[in-house]
Amino acid sequence: QVQLVESGGGLVQPGGSLRLSCAASGLTVGRCTMGWYRQAPGKERQLVARIRLSGSTNYGDSVKGRFAISRDNAKNTVDLQMNSLKIEDTAVYYCYAEPFGTQYNYWGQGTQVTVSS
Image (cartoon, rainbow, N blue to C red):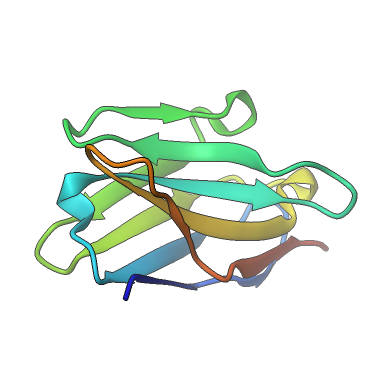
């Protein structure tokens, strides 16, 4: 059974930093495309960052230069380092996994990030 469990969300002031972590079980993160998405109230879910099997990454335009995705194969985790946070980064952040060679995808339950003064 695949599980993705996010942690690290919370309340932070504008300009601050947070680090989200996604712990995976039932799959190997190094054999998946892994990603972080977010959804703000009244808006569609959008890509934040993605890391492929090769290690290549891509980011949503609004977070480029501020966020960084990384993968730890030994721990089977994927992290999202978020710096210079803005109020508009407030959303529920979801971890995503797509095992290579399959059409399946999996989602975590989400973790709330609130940026407010």
